[in-house]
Image (cartoon, rainbow, N blue to C red; front, side, top):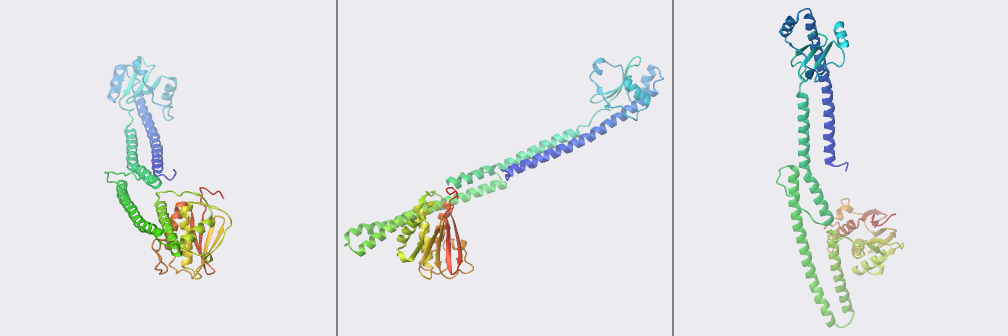
Length: 418
């Protein structure tokens, strides 16, 4: 979850919102200070002008104040109730008489959203001097803040909307990996994610065609192989009993077993069928592999410790058969030594070291040959690796003291708790 691109984008925008909020709060505080200072100056100027008009009679005072740009009116109770104090504190630079009048309440400095008022409460009659538009605050900071918030929210929504097909894409790929079912994701958009989704749809469509062609090919080739085997088995009763008939009967039976084995191996390696895990005896697997390879007892030297492994026993015979066949085929002695140590099984054969370009990874590729052998298709270790991957098993290799050693680690983490 912490690596999710959606979470990272959300955190980025959240941090941006918080940073922008802190920045605008700082700007707002600074603008508020400047606004209060401007109110203080405007009120001070008004009070100074008002002091000059003290000695004038009321009609002349009114004319004098209006000539200075102020409006004079008698206070109305409904108006004064709606006004608020313009100053939070009495400024220190005000003249002492004005500060005393403010403290005693003879003068009140008030404001509303637009205008500044000087209320002379003890005047006869009481006066209200108004400076229009002196208390108006600028609205651009709030408008800018709201506009940026809305723009960021819109950008966030557009980005998430653009990336949302990723979730569908991940779900579709995950479902295909688990169940082999791919749900197409068609998009008419031209962004990169839509292009990736459409490209994946095309690739998966081709992959489905290839898989279907593979199934059809295997089905046909199995049918073609079964036909001569069936004909041969039907001909066996007409042969006289003897060694030749026994050999042919065993050969046909083993060929049928090999075909069934190949079908199951193909199903497991292609992901169409999960391995049927159960307890297997390595000694029995070696015995079945030896029969399939027509090997005598002298070819295999095996030591077992009595522990079982958990695998699909029918399919795992192929693993043992291919590893034994590979060891015998490339052995200088024509022998293979098998040693079991708990869940690890070692296959030894004596031989010359591999060329420098040969590695376990390279020889596990299909149709790879590191020796020119007309009887080898280069598929043995590839099949072994595919079956082991389906079991979550591993295969390792080392060369020591003139012996090649393949190490089969049969420890399934879902079953073993060592």
